[in-house]
Structure formats: C-alpha cells, structure tokens
Amino acid sequence: MRSKDFDLLKLVRPNIAALKPYSSARDEFKDATSNQMIFLDANENPFENGVNRYPDPQQKDVKSMLSNIKNIPTENILLGNGSDEVLDLIFRAFCEPNQDNVITLPPTYGMYDVLANTNAIDVLKVELDTNFQPKVDDILNTQNSNTKLLFLCSPNNPTANSFEASKIEKLLTNFNGIVVIDEAYIDFSEDESWISKLSDFPNLIVTQTLSKAYGMAGIRLGICYASTEIISILNKIKPPYNVNQLTQQKAIQRLEKQQEVQNEIQNIISERSLLIKALKSITWIDIIYPTQANFVLVKVDDATKRYNQLVEKGIVVRNRTNQPLCNNCLRFTVGTSEENEKLIAVLKKLN
Image (cartoon, rainbow, N blue to C red; front, side, top):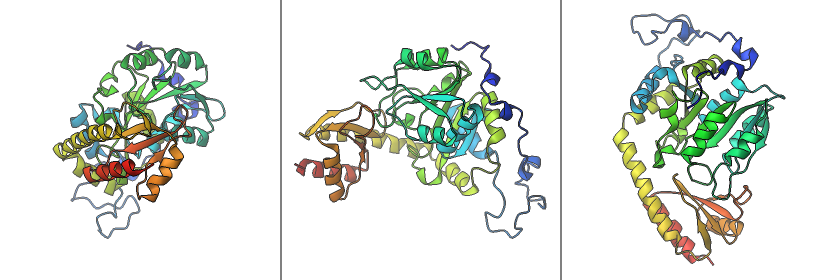
C-alpha cells in the first residue's frame, strides 16, 4: 500500500497547478435540461434539431451509469474523446516539456510514444522480459528526478498477457511518479481491474474504454479512474465540451445493455479458445502466446510473407514483426465465428 504522505502536487506542472480553468456557460448554469428555462447564455443556434445545444460538459448521466456498474464514485471518473485524449491530458498535467520524462515497457501501445513526442517529453524504455513481464528492478533503477509517468498496459497490446499483480503492486509502491495502468482489454481478462485499488494508491490512474468489449470504437469514449485530486487536475485542462452529445447518448444506450455486452464478451472468449485450438494445427506457426485479451499473438516462420498472403485472400491481420521481442509475430483479433472459420480455412491452405 502506498504511503498516504504521497505529495501529488509535487508532480503537477506549476502552471497547471496555478491555472484557473475555463468556465463554460453550461458549467455556470448546471440545470441545462430544464424545459422551463430560456437559454440565451451560450450563443447557440436557438432552433431545435436535437444537437443545437452544447452537451453536458461533465457527462453526468454517463458517469452515473459507470459509477453504478464499476462501484466507483463519479468524482473519481473523467471521460475523454477516446482514451488517447485522456492519456494526452495526463501528459500535459504532469510533464514539463523538454524537461520531464516517462517510462514505457516495449512492446506496448504505440500512442504512448506519439503523445510523449507531441508534448516534447523524453521516453525511457525498459523492455519487457522474455515472458512479456515488467522488469521491476530495472524500471525502478531507470527512473530519475524528472520521471513523472510509468505506463503499464495490462492486458498488454500487442502481447495479450496481463502483468503479474505482485509486480504491479511493487511498482505502485516504489515508483516516484504516477503509474498509469491501461486496461483497454480488461473485460476479456480473468484478472480483477486495478480500479478496486484506487484508495490504496494515490499515484494510480486506470484508463479503460468503450471501444473494445463494449463494441463502441466508433463513438470514441475513453474513461479515466483516479483519485479525486487527480481527476480535479485533469478537469482543469480538459476542453469544456470534449465528449459530444451523440457520443454520450450512444454510450448510455450501450451501458444500459449490460447483459448483452457480457454475452458478447463471453462469446469472444469462447471463440478465442476455439481459435487457439485451431491455430495449433498450423505447421508454420511456431508459438501461440498466452492471451487475456480479444486477440492472439503468434510467432510464425515469416510474418511479412504470411501477412501478405492473408491480405491477398481478403483477410487483414496485424504484422508486429518490427516491435521489440516480436520478430516474425502476427496479431489476430478474435472475430465472429464465421470470420474465425474463414481465417483458419485460409491459414491451413497457405504454404
């Protein structure tokens, strides 16, 4: 458990700590759903078409549903225009350009590097070990006085495995900055989400998304769970209406269908098992790595050759051969039963 004397303000950029946030019209008058009011405060077009008014800047209804589902208070939730916006806000809140650095664990999600470079932040890379697990001691020895963030993607993309809880806990306890656990694929894992540990670790941020298990990639809704102090800091710098009305409406409609979502998750997990079983019969696949995500990473004889062969047959997978520790690796997303059957049939015919 992290010491309660952890000083978050020492990690926040001074200009962000002193920043007075923008106050939008819908922040100043919060009862924006009242039919009894005439709204002449936000310079909106007054003619009703369903989206002529600005959306709720704090997405209260969406957060309320997530709060009930995840058993997390709404004040511990921030929503973004995709997880990428959430991650960008974290960089901008805690990392001083051309001065601070972050640590990533390749092979991992490529946007960490892109966002760091966009914000002029150095990236210190500590590769995973051969079992795709964090090298805890190496990570702790790599951090320095300017290290602000550590990114842990678990289950990891592209390797599909979850990081051992004991390793994550040691990092949370001993890392001097913020630990961001990216749980985009947590719904496909048998492991418990780290949002249950928010009260134990004030330096913990957990990000999730509706893009994967919830099948809402097209609406771009990312979720951040953290202490009220961290959420307050991120709220200061987020755009006033960052999550649009249509996204909020679609998210609510999907969140209301929990049983349907859970059925789809179980279907994907079942199909994942069938896919792995079938992949074992493909002679040119050398390794099928363990997975707790909705995809499978495999090592093959020649990844570029096999990738091109599949494209010629109308199937697009991901060639990860240029990633560290992923030489000649392909990543297969679990599709529908029909899609998976077609994939296997094509794989069996390749030579």
